[in-house]
View 1 (cartoon, rainbow, N blue to C red):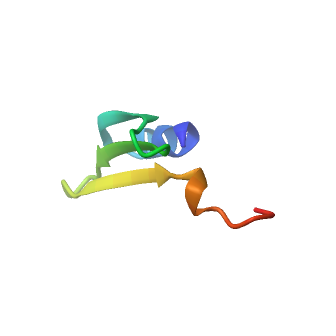
View 2 (view 1 turned 60 degrees about the vertical axis):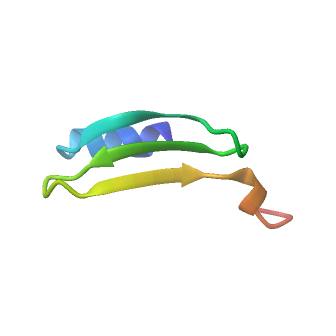
Length: 52
């Protein structure tokens, strides 16, 4: 997650909210791309299947 957010920033994205732990057990952050579109990047271990 932190690497993805850093890659977005290096590509010119504006970080809106740094990635952080969320109430549902996941980890998420937000950025806007060069066209102004808002993106949410999420990792949630609850969505992993056994063996992932």
